Length: 417
Figure 1: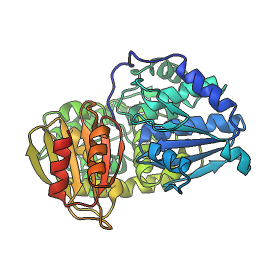
Figure 2: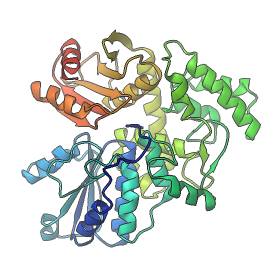
Figure 3: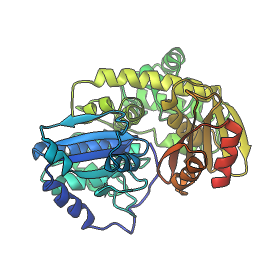
């Protein structure tokens, strides 16, 4: 869950995807650089499957700044691989003559190709599905639709309508009452979901009590009762923002996936988004269909507990247009999750900033999220440049890593905005 969308961008170029496909189809080796978010991860997985089916060797690298990783390689530096996966055999000459593809809704840098194309507001997973078809490989509809949800969009919008319709006709998805969860066990799914923030979030015992309170059963009526109570708990939680009621709606009436790796499309998106941050190599394996769902769920549970604990204990402050949360954690990977949850369910301001109260290995981590795109990646770049730090992200969600105190960082981000 990243940027939010409603309709495809008017700047969509129907020939752009075909041009990328042509470049990749003739490449002896392809380097895929993905941003660490669920949508980009789904998109990289779709492209990787297509390349594998075409017997085109490839290598995958995820980072908060994929364009920076491309530039480092071109400069001859050794980039941080942060979740590297490779497929196919190649030789040094082929690798040297490789094509690079950046998958991100942020900046493009020096890459040979990028999806989505500049000005295309669709989820990366939708564009990757088009690219896969251009390469002659039918994309996995569940992975595409999970990517759509991970992008902050809704199945059926952002050019995903025909794909959703075909998936429903084939019985791959079916809409039902209830909550979008990753697991069949509702208590487990609710406790560890990062699609919502409620009093039971991160607490398995509290989630189990809530499920017992509605006498839940695996039926439409049982799902309805559970969804109603979850909605009430979410919007009446201490510190819940006025927008929480709208946000929780996106986690209700899910698309079940009878034969999918996770219980619902929303749950699939949730796990992809978490694993993209914590273990991108594992997430790629999930996207490629490897038998590692249990391992991915274990990462998801651990991440969710840490993120919800950090949000619940955050020290908050409200500035003109910016809601700030200082959190204590030794897991920087949770910071983007915390800022997304805070933005959706706690923030009364259009922009939310989360910073670590304590430095980790001498660096302070931060993430900023906006309800609507507002060039956050550009603002993060300014701050990172000022303090010789690192940044990455998209117009609606960005991350920072700098060696300054939290007050200085907060002031710098506010000024950059």
